[in-house]
Image (cartoon, rainbow, N blue to C red; front, side):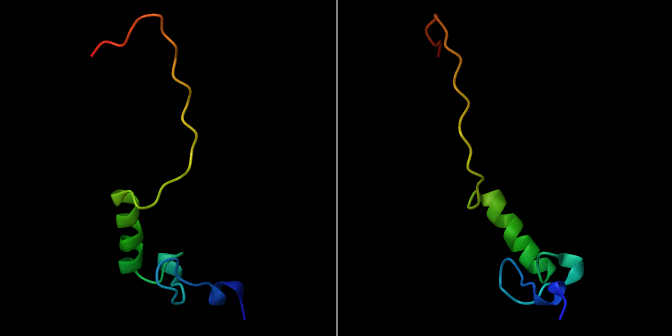
Length: 59
């Protein structure tokens, strides 16, 4: 059995379809994209230090 045949969809767990990899269908790919666009997925990062200014912030 090849490694590709064992891989599962990242959303629903069904077997992947090569043309939608790493998903099984266009639907699961769209579900994943919606999660990113809604902000449910995020990549952890450290915020860059703010530049220090001698002048007070102006609103």
